[in-house]
Length: 138
Image (cartoon, rainbow, N blue to C red):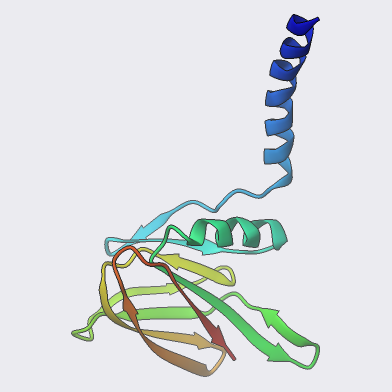
């Protein structure tokens, strides 16, 4: 009797893990530009949840949204430029989703994001071992 119960659990575990993975979106692939690793995405609630869970391992997470007549909504296609403390542009990408995770070394940065004709600017400090989340809201 004990053998049957253990065998059933061992067979059920892979099926459960497969079903769990099938219902949750995976984190989009890590990309790299100018030596800076990043992940962009967050389209759909499953992918957004996956990125939020992943964000705790990244030094910087940026979220993009705007206010419309129907309320606040997530946006994509924001152009993001990140400059280091010496004002050198080290990152310049158009985001294909409302979330951007960026692996920046510790230091001070200026984040400039453009959506439509409006630009938002924030200065941030990245601290080793900490995860920071900022919002760019138009």
